[in-house]
Image 1: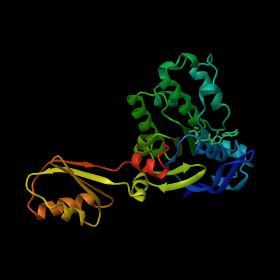
Image 2: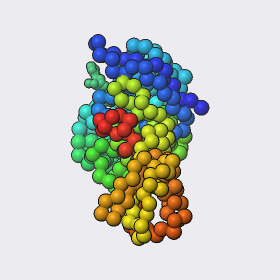
Image 3: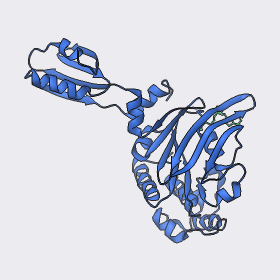
Image 4: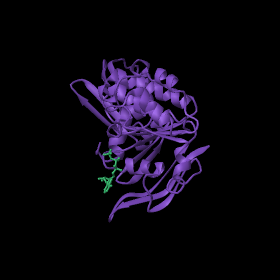
Length: 300
Ligand SMILES: Nc1ncnc2c1ncn2[C@@H]1O[C@H](COP(=O)(O)OP(=O)(O)OP(=O)(O)O)[C@@H](O)[C@H]1O
């Protein structure tokens, strides 16, 4: 079921068009990534979905509502991750959660949320005294306190150490598994690969790719590279003639074969047929990082 649909969304700031016919949809219960370099228009898109900005053209629906016109009804069902500047340093963690819970008709149990997000021991701690990771977890807990159907998370793990990032990813998966649809704004490829069920890549105000992380990689035809040292003479033309192979280079006894598609299968089958044993076999898999750089023209 489609929870969010965006069709031909256009937004201008003055005479500058920052969103130029953006279309994508988000299904219920998925983690959907909105990925793109700085200034691509991610935040503007999400602000249109949250009802904070009014599109100049196009149609946006979130849970069947028009965010620009039915903002209040929408706010009951969506959770939005705050930015740091939006909480006062003197506010205690428990107070912040109670305050935000009071804005919602059927809030979640705040004690349970504190427990879930590892903040039970910080209930009386002032916001200004929390660590970066604790602040980030509090922002997510605040986004969830209204028991939303959709939650928007923006630059989720900024400032967290590797351990903190992984723990946060696990918690976001739990959020998804509890039935909440998650829209994640990120410019971090590893985050999108690890977390998102699907993602759209935004560049210069347009969607330039959309699909699962694997789809995005495949769509760009980013090369796979296989390298090895043959232990017997090898006819490189045999490899160059394989359908998926684009390039064969031999330097200092190491052969490097690259291409898009089933390169690894074709090369290993050819070697096996020729009875050629190889040493130091390495396969460099394509990654979303490579795909992203290709899609956005290297502006990562
Ligand atoms: N209120 C505004 N007035 C004028 N221009 C704006 C405004 N807000 C954003 N912009 C411009 O619109 C473009 C898109 O900005 P947006 O914040 O949506 O991009 P983003 O992909 O979220 O980037 P970042 O990752 O840097 O936050 C940028 O060039 C930005 O400078």
